[in-house]
Length: 71
Image (tube, rainbow, N blue to C red; front, side, top):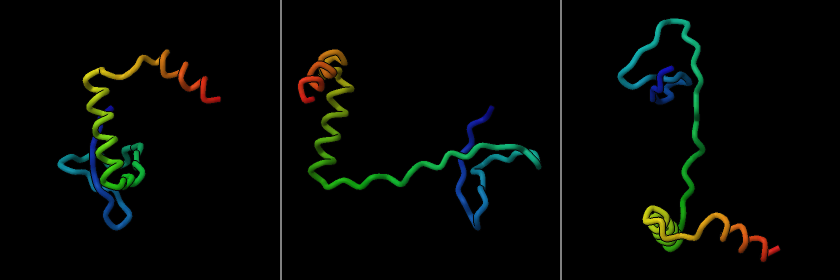
């Protein structure tokens, strides 16, 4: 299996710097458009991601316990 990237032109997928044999069967993953966030929410999200990268968050068990209290 290969992972290749491309763009759609005139309704057809055009691969970037690669080619496949004629008749190749392919699967196409088309991500949803990016979500646009207001500046203040983007900053909050960036900080949360940085916190997670530093492993400063709470454990999954603690998170689930907190969520249970919200029911």
